[in-house]
Each structure stands twice: as C-alpha cells, then as structure tokens.
Image (cartoon, rainbow, N blue to C red):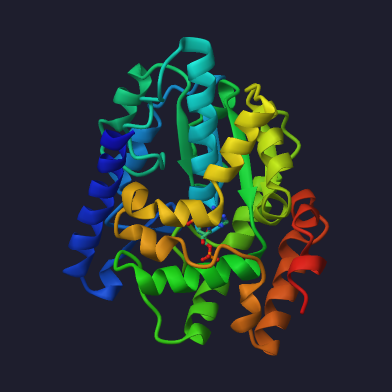
Length: 310
Ligand code: A3P
C-alpha cells in the first residue's frame, strides 16, 4: 500500500508542479467535445485506454468529480483487501499500483493492467460512451456514485480554487455560470446523469448516492459488498465503515493523499450549497435538473426535493 500511495501522490505532485507554470487558459483541452485537465489526461492515453481488457470480476467505480469518489475508493480497496485475505491469504491488495483513475496515466498503463491479477479496482469520471467497450462486453460490474448537483457544484467550486491543475474562479457566480454551461473538466454533470441513466437498469450497474451512504454507511457498505460478491462478518463490516468515515480519512490524508488531501477533505457533508446558491441560481438549477433528469431513474434516486430544495 505504501508504495502504491507514493505512485498516487507522485503523479498528483507532478501535475500540480507543471500546472503552477501554466496560464489559466492552458489548463484544459477538449477531446470528443469534453474538457479535461492537460496535466492529468491526454488524447494519446484516451486512445490507448481502448486496449484495456476488462474482466467480469473487475470492480469499477464511476462518479463525476466531487461526488465522493475518494470516499468510495477507500471502501472498495478495503473490501478487496478483505476479500483477498480470505480467498488468497494475501496481506493486502497489490493491484493498486497504477493511478486508480482509469483515464489518468501513461499510454503503457493498460498493457500493464492487462497483466495484473484479479481483482482489479478502477475509478472513472468518464461518460459511459467514453469507457473502453470491453467493460460492457465482458460484463464488468460498475458501482455508479451520484451526489446532489448543488453540493457537487459547491464542492467543485472550492476544489477548483484549491488546486492549480484546474482553472480557478474569482467569484462563485462565475463558477456557477461555467458549471451550468458545460465548461467543467469531465463535462456537464446534468449530462453525466442523463447519459448514465441509460445504464441504470443494467444488472451490472449498482447506483448509490452520496447522501444515502452518509445517512446509513453500514447498509451502504453491506450493499456494495453484496453487489461485488464479497462476504463480510459484522466485525469486518464495522471496520470498513470506521476506516471510511470523513474524520478518519481526513486524519490519514497526509499519508494517503499528500498535499492534495488538504483540498480534497473539505467538509464531507450534505447541503453546504445553502451557503452559496442565490435564489436565482436555485431556480436555474431546479429548472435545468427538471428538464435534463427529472423523472428519470437517477433523477428520482437523488431525492432532489429532499436535498436540493431550501
Ligand atoms: P466536500 O467538498 O463537499 O467536502 P471526490 O472524492 O469525488 O473528489 O469528492 C470529494 C468530496 O467528497 C468532498 O466533498 C469531500 O469532503 C467528500 N468526502 C471525501 N471523503 C469523504 C468521506 N469519508 N465521507 C464523506 N464525504 C467525503
């Protein structure tokens, strides 16, 4: 684990150092109509990604940036470590040597990943149509994480201003306009929800919301473990939940995430949007949400009335 976390923090530290020398308008590039940070992604790596050979026992976490992917990542790595200890008597998973986000790395990453033993864990912020086809063809299981759009926007705003790899914003109002007009890295969140909604009934896709996991982490972790076929004792379940609380992840963050941890583990709660959104912005988001995802399976699952109405 130590070695792999070093790979993780090294990649982030390097990207931050490069971004520090760049101008704001150089930080993003467009690929197939979607913006990505140049310090983490490239067209060559996107093309190389198609050579990934997915497996039916892969563990894939899909989530838009700031929906809690690092949180779910901690839970998934922990579950795999427990699974491997039970089934292979291995002390810890060695399959996390690659940067966990599928679309971030070098062009040789996918050939190396093809040689890794099962079970592999990978995270992605990509739209389903931009994932390697073998993921769907070979029936890899996908945990789809979604979070209420107002908290995603709030978290993304502070994150953009806290890390040099993303364009920063002088004012929340400017960020809000960018968020609502497809100027975000990894694309528009409402589009993300409507595209992933097409897969919401797939038996290989399980959807979980940030809010439901926050409300009942024991049940959430249990459901995730069941979905990936990992059996847990009560004690193991409690351990996974305790190690993934916001407080314990924040406490360990220097070790697990380096300097990036300070920006990442911000508040870890629900409804911070109420401190930023104006009445007009609320109306705009409510209308756009209703138009794009209202009444869909994912839209309903998000409980917009509960989490996004003042
Ligand atoms: P906030 O900015 O609202 O605090 P991602 O990992 O996808 O970048 O998402 C980051 C968001 O998840 C941040 O939200 C962060 O605080 C929150 N988060 C990280 N770990 C968490 C945990 N263990 N429990 C709850 N929220 C967590």
